[in-house]
Length: 107
Image 1 (cartoon, helix red, strand yellow):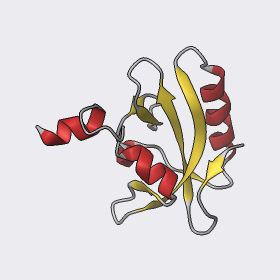
Image 2: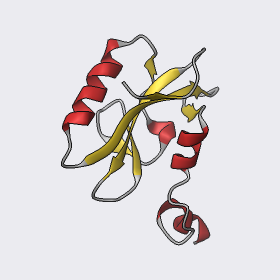
Image 3: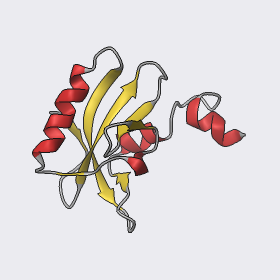
């Protein structure tokens, strides 16, 4: 199991790289995917459903890459936000300001 972050009062979200769009995506509660981590389903650290979701994501090799459980904390509205710098960086999109989420922010 790949879990990035530190342990503590945290939850897990399923993160992956969408091979078609080339963007980081997060699995929502309805099992669809979102580019926004705040929409991701947060699993308790000991929830076996997190492992089930991870296994399903790993099996979708035609569409997904770098599937992993990422550690998050919940904000006051119970929306997940990343705790580890790797996932914080991934939420910002490509490091080239003219692609993906960063390009949209310029418009």
